[in-house]
Length: 331
Image (cartoon, rainbow, N blue to C red; front, side, top):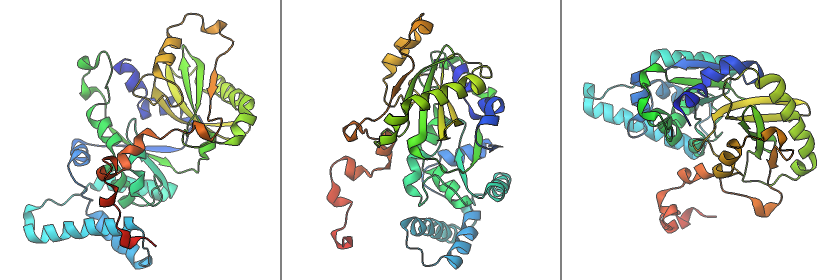
């Protein structure tokens, strides 16, 4: 795996080539100040979220979801700290980025955000509508709570054999704002491409058994093959890479993301050892068994979602569940 391959899979690099078959998106350049904010300890929200929260409370003050209480407490603590420290406590503001985000929200109404490579899937438990954002507060909350975002900013070339030679000043970090679309998880698939040929397809949601996939597997593979050969293959320069696609209907495929071919990308129902072994073969054109399509065939095949371990309190991971749950809250 090379740094050039990781860079080619950075959102703006693949989207300018394949955006016509993907979801409408806007790209916002972020500066060093914003990067430092994302990497800073704690969850401190920009000042603009304060007025936004006041507006939300005035129209939805009967909301009892914990997220509302959490955000209110964060903002209240910030206000109290500012009152105590006076001018010594820096106000968090990003006028240019916030202006562009508001424009995107007006344009799309609901959005999904990510950086160059990763989304905030691992922090979606913080938000009532998971990764669906409708205001600045939800956007900043997801970004600030995500370990995947931190990884993008600190170690995006992990595992690359030439990572020691990369000049990190040659690329720009970007905040990607995508129009929100409802995606049926049973129709989302990850495709592994070797030498510009799809060699493996995996069900994307490995936590759930979907009965209809087995019945439709032939037409699913056919639709993905036709989409790849007609819309992707000739346009994208890498020989080995991974794509995520959504199949909303028969003969209809939407490109969701492009990922690097290597351990940085979750292999889902495959192992990277077997995928790399396939990539080292010289007779791919003669293998009639390809692509191999793997999906959950029964309820026993369900797997845990790996990033969801990030969502558990440390007490749960250590087995101290009694410290997490208060019996008085149980009905």
